[in-house]
Image (cartoon, rainbow, N blue to C red; front, side):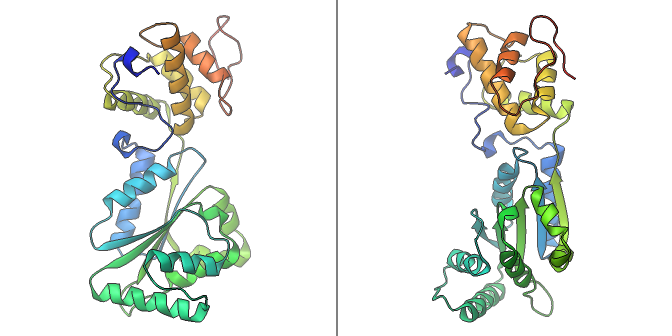
Length: 280
């Protein structure tokens, strides 16, 4: 709606994760580099956690794009409702026949992994929304992580989940699983300088040639968004809409305030515009 008004070639703040707009900010870059290093070292189970909206899906897509050629990806975007369902989902990703017999299924998976290892390939299974896995599915993940030859793992597992996964893994009965996680990264919220870099990068990557957001407006967006990229996107998008509707060529305080007022989850200012522009 506002692309032509601001001279943009694409939507800079769409909520759908777009790897073309990826900016290597420290929390995301650390998660990607840690995971790739762990895979190179042959580690079994790796965890990436982050609050809702901190960029797990985008990190996931960047990892998929950057996987070295010796790895074969099995991506499980929907959490399994049982251990058996998880094995079946993995078998389908590896193009194996499934007949419902769990013992045969487990043996078939191991033989498939051995065959790929003999051909110079190692399977990486990426499990999204891991906090929703039931206990028996987590136990299957632990058992799969134990599959190995005398020298190396047959399967690498990357778990992506919300902080609730840490809470679950802290339970005593899951201590064996917890000890199998050898590397862990946490996607934190962005600080002010990272938020500014994030906004400027996405605008530039979308064809922006002018300074649409001044530092005061960026600071207000950072404060209201708690540094969460998804909320930053929503606030910037709505601010651009507000400015476009008034036929302005830059964002002002009123545009940002309107965006904040319209966004669930945004931190609201103490005073309404134009009395004072401040946050607690």
